[in-house]
Image 1 (cartoon, each protein chain N blue to C red):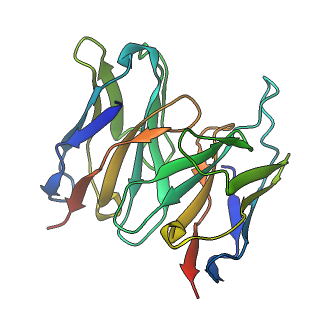
Image 2: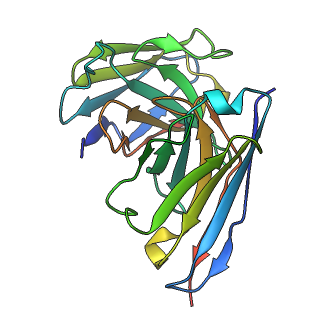
Length: 112
Length: 116
């Protein structure tokens, strides 16, 4: 199975400051169709997960442009340009290229 | 509005069975692949199963292969997960989701507890 490794696992951030989460895969996520199926999810406390970013860098509908995704191959990053209080939660990367699809361990973002 | 609602969770003894349902509305169900993802309490997310839009293709990780069966009834806009030979490791919240390579919409989840 493809192992997804996130860092850091805990991310204390001051309101209004930027935040960055890294996600590395144990093998390339470039699919045979040329697409890279790396996605990012947010899970606020007590809520279901919500997809933020699909295929590396595409924001889902309703996701603020403070969130951005980048990367290629095996190395990916989620960035939040200015953290707001509502961003508190756990962030997961997920690969949808190789079955079984797998998630990273999650990064807990909290406000300092 | 896309809505997904899971049903069927509950308390079951080790070795027992449970059938989860996911009722979908607000989108063309028969045109969408669907997923089941679970989450143990305080833990991360784990893929349980996926199924193609017409039900012809199904996918399972080794952890549930041979014990879980995903299916769908496109005439009823409903996704199912039949879970057999349950163990305490199967305890968690089970979410259904819509999408091809990842769920873009998720239900609220249903809790499955496997315990004697």
